[in-house]
Length: 272
Image (cartoon, rainbow, N blue to C red; front, side, top):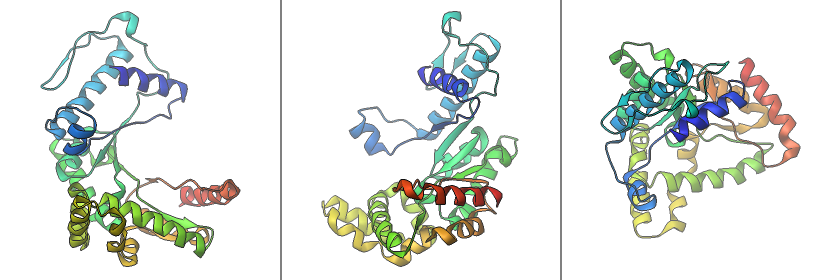
């Protein structure tokens, strides 16, 4: 209920520009890092989305709250805790999804899917993610257009080749860490880099973190991450992503002197 109230307040403050993003974690982090019990993530997340939409409906209409599921029960909403209707639509709910079951579920229940950086390569989105969203939407009798993709992958860009080389090493480090996790191997397997993930996993188990980056070569980075200097990156991104989605993230420049240039790139992307 706390998240529902916070999302409602943020939607009001933003004038309707807020989006609520939800996602799951791998079992090791759920249990060992957050000290929380593990349960089936897909059914639990679906139920959580449904419960939030029910709560939002009650906020908007004043209807009695009555949500009773396997994982969540919300049956108490005193008038004092009902913030009342908004002058803008209820906050849309975007899901982070990696596996096929969660992706299908998002297609049937969420207002959008935010791709994980490890699963944002255009080829993977086209060949795996979009079909899974469409399948999930069809199962629930709705259009896949109701669950558009927000592509949130890494983008390798900068003012010049020196900046690209520096940022490439940071992305290499991030990819080597992320792909040491089994949950992210599906994309590697599909794109032909499955053996890399397994090698990274073994190195991580042995605590050999400093060696992991050597297993992510430039060819792998180029296949997974759109790249180019500021002068070229807008057209590169439009070519790769425009057929797949109308929305994507873009990295904030580290140097504020580049803000104006990046603003021009964002204008070009919106026009495209």
